[in-house]
Amino acid sequence: MSTHQGRWETVTDHAEFLAERVWDGFVAHDERDRMAAVKAFAAVDSSQFQHVDDATARRAAVAYVNALWKKDEIEDAHVTDGEFDRAALDAADWGPVQENFAERARLLGIDETYADLSTTAWRRHKTGGDYWTPIMRAQMLELRVAMGDPEYPHKPRYGQSGFGPEATRYALAVEHHDYRSTADLERGVDVMIPYYEAILRAHE
Image (cartoon, rainbow, N blue to C red):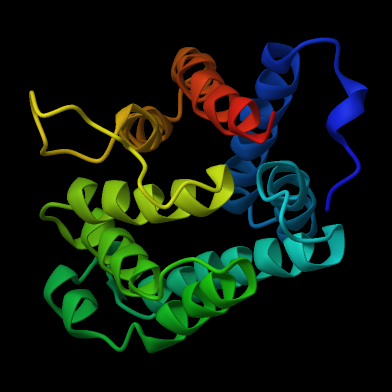
């Protein structure tokens, strides 16, 4: 179990730290700084997954970073005249990405369909199509483990569809990231603070 819970005065302070770190991880990925990405994502995973020790959380973060780097390799192999060949990219072998997401799921105890959903989401994110449904479903599965609640999101009978507000926030943060502006970076962090607040409060 992680030992980091006592470093913040409030849950919101801790959640803000995690929201900033997850954003640091994605920015490090954009800048191809693998070590910085691992450091940022490991800081997040060691706090959000309290049922594993820090070493396991770091291995899970490494698997996530490996998946992103394998994604980049596939994308880079399907560029023609500076543009992605979307048809070829869609037909490419995304197995190496799936394998690393599967390793993350195995380490953390996430439902194994997380790997296929995450791979589909990131493939469609680049090639076109509905990426948001699989990414929200994947995050719902991850949230269930992070919160220790296999029934999340506990929606009442008035609207059973959907994946919960936290999973939806994750998809919205990806949308903000796509714009790459300072303003959208700040909005993305703000969007993710309640995501981590929900996880941290579930640990109480």
